[in-house]
Picture 1 (tube, one colour):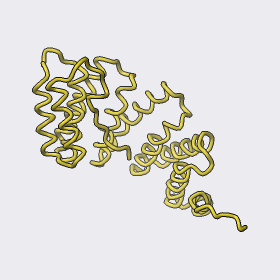
Picture 2 (cartoon, helix red, strand yellow; picture 1 turned 180 degrees about the vertical axis):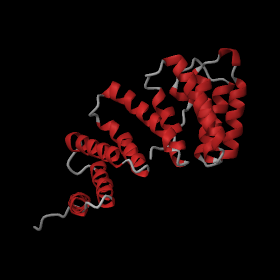
Picture 3 (tube, helix red, strand yellow; picture 1 turned 90 degrees about the vertical axis):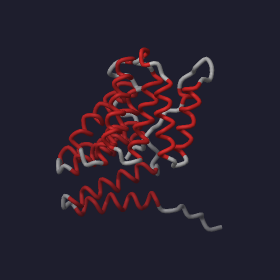
Picture 4 (cartoon, helix red, strand yellow; picture 1 turned 30 degrees about the horizontal axis):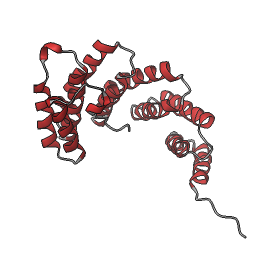
Length: 225
């Protein structure tokens, strides 16, 4: 699962420090320390520092995304959903529907839905994020692998086995082509796909993939003198 992404004020260059930037930084610090209630209050104050007549603005999108992450950490899932959606709407209004700045927000909202078992809501967001990545990097770039794996797992949970296998095999093909032979992510994909094959009663195929993954994970032994 992709982890939740918060924005810090350093992500955007501003001419000078101000009250909003200071408060947003305090919210970030509280979140990183696990003080989610404090972080929530700082981010709410950061929102209050912004001029609503200047909406949409990158600062408002940033603060809403960060507040959503805190809501999620506190189990306030309806508020988290709303604030992620508001943040995404602002970014899309500023940058357009295919801008890479949307990816983190799409992934955050999709992750929230997936944690709640709402795969039907998560799937189009993961697919949209994948489409943007493919447009920027190409369809076979290793950076698309994590989303391919997530989609495969989501389809597996929905018992859409043909779709799940298509994404597992695509992720595996990209990893085999573009990653080093002993790359950790390649071993992970092999094990995930093997687990899927075992679940679909293809034990012999699963064992072959597991054997290959275990060999990759085994510590290298030094040659005898």
